[in-house]
Image 1 (cartoon, rainbow, N blue to C red):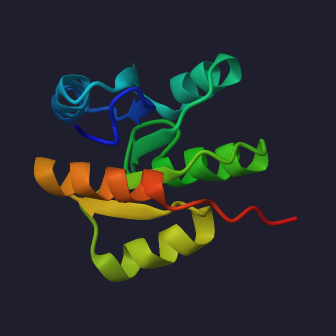
Image 2: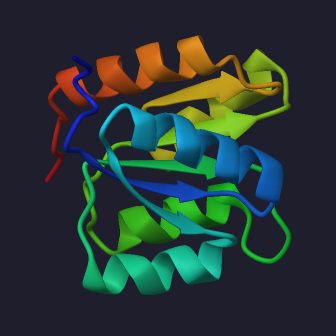
Length: 130
């Protein structure tokens, strides 16, 4: 049994393929998944729902993943965020630091790696700063 079972996860990606693939895998593991195809839609969903974990693509049309993370942080939402990216690890480490996201996974997505990192993210308690 996966730690993801019963968890509520928001998946944000403007590309249908990765969004649906992540959705299908998480549903098979028993997670409750809500999808958003852009940052603006994600913010609307976050107004009315709370989540155990958020995944967002870094590079999206409209509001990108960095802007989404910053807006989530500004709104005081403390849900852990994972970034999905095609960028290099040096650039991504800087982005994690700026946005407060807890982890990233590179594209193309390795499903087993994604699951492992999501499970780890859900096990680590968040540090809340004043």
